[in-house]
Image 1 (cartoon, rainbow, N blue to C red):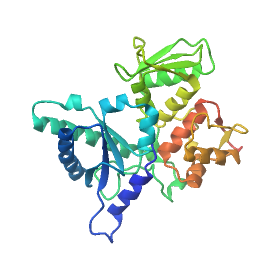
Image 2: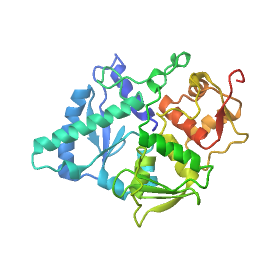
Image 3: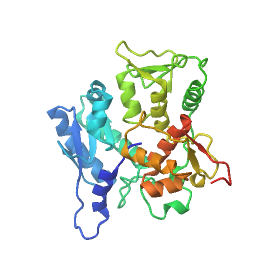
Length: 328
């Protein structure tokens, strides 16, 4: 999932007793009309009241990014990813929210934003400070965390479609005879995997949903990418799918995976898949010898959700493996 250091710093204001008023969280907006921004400003005030924080629209230097979904679909994933710069990304489908009743429109947007902020809180500790009304999470840095199994990072139960998708991708990475696979997020957001050729045709919007919002697609054998879909290598897409599967059971993980060492391949090089400094720091730690997830988190000060996604990707691509008991 995404790094939330800027947001965590902002939320620190809510738990500092010396400050009489917390600093507002700035929500940087993208792709909205002036009329839509007027509605959003009012809705954000209501969302903030419900969740125990202050949210304000801003044009720059935001703690979060709020974008219109149709605008997101028109922007290349690499461009949007560079702009978001690892901040939490919220999206709104203004077309779906355009009902004649202004009160109903505002209420629809309000509920959607609350849902998205709660999802972010389940994956990070960014929004859990000072009674924010959001679910508590252990995914931020906690100095006492490493001595216990991370309860909030327990495996999410995979639905049948997600489990089958991940299983077929894993098999297809080594078995060229695996039948082609199609999955997506709805019309215009489809990916099609040809295991024999080791390639993936992926719609721009599907790539956006996978790489930026970190959502797993749903299997759909009848879906087809559009004419403008681009071709990517299978291993690159497998890395992104594994990152998105951070909350599923880690591949071949033992019961006490948190304290089980991981061993990386000699001279493992992940720069083909990621240039994130955090990922490069983690792989350097593994290169120095077996490390448990607990040790990796402590040494690199990384959130559990981000760490799980990284480990999942290494396991999917065979870059690392669990050490048998007693060999750490």
